[in-house]
Length: 334
Image (cartoon, rainbow, N blue to C red):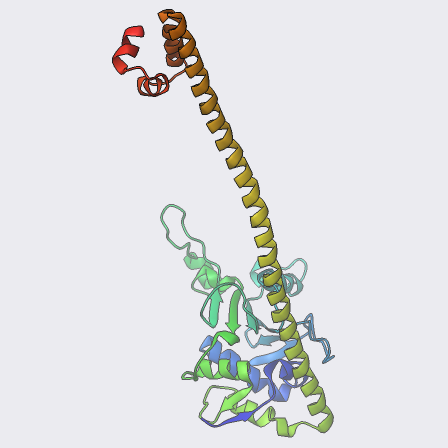
């Protein structure tokens, strides 16, 4: 399958896709993802519009608004971040409060879609696309809480979840194989920087025209390659740190395990030693007492010994083994 090389999407978001002439590329991604025509009306100020290609540790995002006033925050994250789920929540929550004027009714809160393109292993899951939304379920009945007819008419939506922000996570590194659907064609481009000749997904044809490496100036191309190098270095640092952490963890685990094992072994040995010593001492004491009792011809001594052993909780079988008496003799003494 023949492919051509194009500018990576995260770089294009920083430098090129903010131009209104290039909106069609972003519109194509959103149209493919949401399975309906999305037209960008304007771009708004977002939190991390970084222009420095060396600022590789920050995410890149674009905040767009469509003709219906809905907000789309499209975010690319290259480096691993364990609290990324909370970052998604913070970004959306911030938009909710920023884009409503003080004194306005809550019905004017804008619908927000958070589209997250991540190049690291976020959470646990094998899919390359995840969608999150808010629903309210009956604790006892399991039914979904629905809008009233008046609310549906007033807000022009059918279900409660349409009033709340929605999240999309594209784990591009988890897509394997060749693209067969428009969405997979986009995922393939996001992950590899390649657009296949047979791709028909909305926006990719515009990407071919706008994002070819051949269209870049020498200085832009040099900066772009530095960005790619930085991205590779970042990933290597992440994998190296993770590998070193695993090795260090295993070594510490072995050391701790050996220490704990020795402690448990010593305790077990001491306990067993005490039990064996107690048994041996008891046996010798009984033997000595019986010998003395027989020598003196005092049956009462033997009887007292048996009674004491019985009161100590020993069974007749144990007493018999310890004293050499038969069960019948012991029962007579008791």
